Length: 92
Image (cartoon, rainbow, N blue to C red; front, side, top):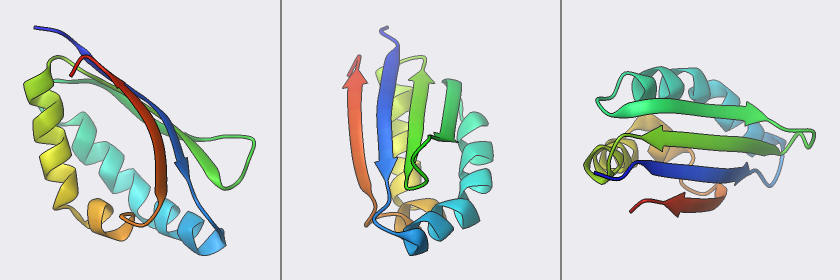
């Protein structure tokens, strides 16, 4: 199996979107890191207060797809659906 890597940025339009990220991020990170196949997962602020760096590593495409499916139906997924994502994914 091939490892899957996602890297990129979560880009908020304004302070309201930043507040949404801050409100839900800790729980999202905790749940994701507990998923089978999650090797590493981080969402960290950058020098721009509207931009977050996202780095994910999953052990295989199936684990990554399961993560994506879980996130789509999660509180995080619903709350942040309108926030821009600039991601590159390798391994899928």
